[in-house]
Length: 135
Image (tube, rainbow, N blue to C red; front, side, top):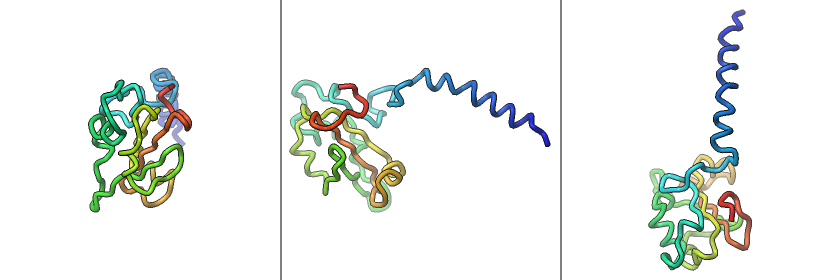
């Protein structure tokens, strides 16, 4: 039995682990911007947007794009409660939002079960809990 290849893989894996941990100790996305799956309240600006749908549409349009052959929209959750559709985004003021986190279809299905072919939008309000924006 040759133990050397397994030992090399183990040593390489362990040597890269501290670099990953040091790069992002919080576990949340290191950068906030157009490519991030996290949209924080600080990105909304003072009064630039009148509702949450407008803010998401301009700052992270890919969150709203349908996915899959049927172009399924994402399923939305506000402070952990599932919403029936995305119409509620018109009624939500950006000043009430702490963050919006987009989960891919694979992640959303693994967390919430079937019916998430378009992914999930996890909206945290000032009345709910903060997941990662530190507000």
